Structure formats: C-alpha cells, structure tokens
Amino acid sequence: MAEAAFVSCGGATAPQARRREVVVQGKRVKTVDVHAHCAVPAAMALVGRALETEALLMSSTADRIRAMDEQGIDVEALSINPYWYTAERDVASKLIQIQNETLAEICAAQPDRFVAFATVALQHPDLAVEQLEQGVKKYGLRGAGLGGSVDGLELSDPKFHPFWAKAEQLGVLVFIHPLGTAELERTGRLGGNGLLTNTIGNPLETTIALSHLIFEGTLDRFPGLKICAAHGGGYLPSYAARSNAVQTTFPHRMTGTLKKKPTEYLRQLYFDSIVFTPEALRHLAAETGPSQIIMGTDYPFPWTSTSVDHILNTPGLSDADKVAMLGGTAQTLLGIPA
Ligand SMILES: [Zn+2]
Image 1: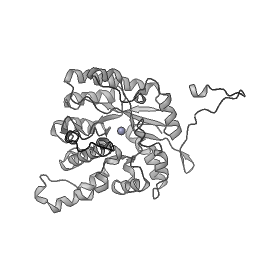
Image 2: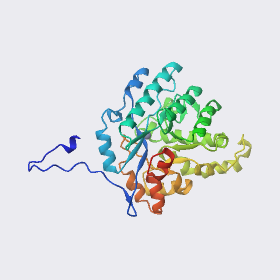
Image 3: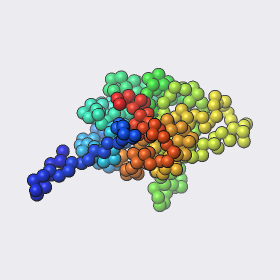
Image 4: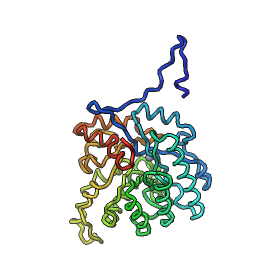
C-alpha cells in the first residue's frame, strides 16, 4: 500500500514495488519458498519467549510481500522454529492451538501468497499426532515443521514413531529445521567469532538428525514419509559416501540392517536450496537427484536474497529441473495450485 501511495512532484505516480515474475523457457513459473520463518507472539507469551526480530511478525506483511515480489517468490510456506519442546502438556496444547489457528488465519487472508506448516508439540507424541491431524484437516495447514531434535531426543527415537506414522498416513511434508547443537554450546566449543552456534551448529544438527533417521531405520519403517531438510540437509549430502563406507569399514558397529545403502535414502528425502554457490547446488543435485531440491530463502534472516537466481544460474540443471526446484515440486508436496 504505502509504496504505491507516493506521488512525485510532477504528479505522476512513482513506480510501484515491482513484482518479479519468474519465467523459464517462455513459461511463467509459480515459485515457492519452503523455508520462511514467522512468529505468533500470543503463543510465545505462554512460555515467556522473546521475539528475535520484528520481521518475523505477520501483523503487517507489507515488507515481507515486498521482499517476495522483488525476489520473485510467489508463495511462502511459513514455519515456526520450535521453542516449546520443554513445555508441559497443557501449556504445549494451548500454545500450539493458538499458533496453528493463527497460521491458518494468516494463510486465509492471503491464500495466493502463504501456506504454512502446522506446529506440533512433539515432546508429547500423542498430542502431536492430534495436532498434525487437526492442523491439516481442520486448519488447512500443509504438513508439519519440526526441530532437528526434541529436548535431547533424536527424531528417530521410537517414542516418535506414532508421529511419523501419522505424517506418512496423511502424506504431508515434514520440514525439519535445526535448533542448533545445545550440547556443544554448553562446552563452549562453538563460542568465539563467527556465530558458530548457527553457522555450523545448525547444519550439524540437521546432519545428525538425518543420519539417525537413516541408520536407526526410521525411513525403512515409514518409507512413505516426505521429509524436507533445511539448509540443503546440512553437511550430510556433502560427505554422504562416508555413511556407506562405514558399513564395510566397521561392519561390527552396524547394530541394525538397512534396506538400502545410506546414500540411497538421500534420494527419497527433500532438501532446500540454501547452499550458496552453483557448485554446491550442482553437487546437492548430484547426490539427491534434482527432483529432491526445493527453493528456500530463510526469510527474514538475510542469508540470501537471490534464491531464484541461484537456481536459474546453476549450470547443468535442465529447464525442467529448474522449474521443479523453483516451485513445481513444492506445489505437488504442499498442495499449491499451479
Ligand atoms: Zn531457517
């Protein structure tokens, strides 16, 4: 609104914020950002959680929409990083109720620009099952967002099997976003310059989470799961073959049998595209298959503002690959009309 209201001295209207329309081979592509953060303060207040940045708020979406328009993002799939994994059951229940209702309202207000992942209190797995089902069926949310661990437990812990079973049954996408590696933070090893708690702590947690889901057999037990890992899956796709090599190097340390080679599971997982260079995206696609990569921005955290161009300008990707990464795959997974 505001940016369109300026009138120049000559009386002509100043140019409106431009909405970039992404085109591949002459055809408009509806682009989807699978990695976009937001916050619901009324829910955060229940556990005294402070807002990290006002840019997370959805009370006014003008700045967010402007950023989306400039970057060529048509739809954001909103998620909220879990901060409630230590909450008692009744608080967690109320918190998630407020949060998912609000997410549904945000999406309903601008259905052509926003969809959202349900939030779930995974520390109470039976509750999380109900919250996922209600989130999808009652509130029209498109899956669930999880952290990379739950109050010290791995996502592969059998305690969470009922949740994975429900996600598989509903056929919805589960977006895994790391919360950092709290255990390392306590030792001070991620202190000092460079925000290592986030810079390497976040992708490290994703690497650990995915490795357990593979090696503990969770992905064998629930083969229909649709999981998207943030930040290109952390470090796992960069060094995936080591997970195969351990099977022959230390076979006596394999405590369970897997149905496939560890690297083959990367071809059934999804990964966002936040890997920064064309070479990294090329390598990710080589390890996972281009069909497994979904565009992400990490908005409002300014890790990148060129997610569209990153995909468009990566050599070796076909036009079909680019269309799939920019939005095609996400449309299918998230039920977004073309
Ligand atoms: Zn993020």
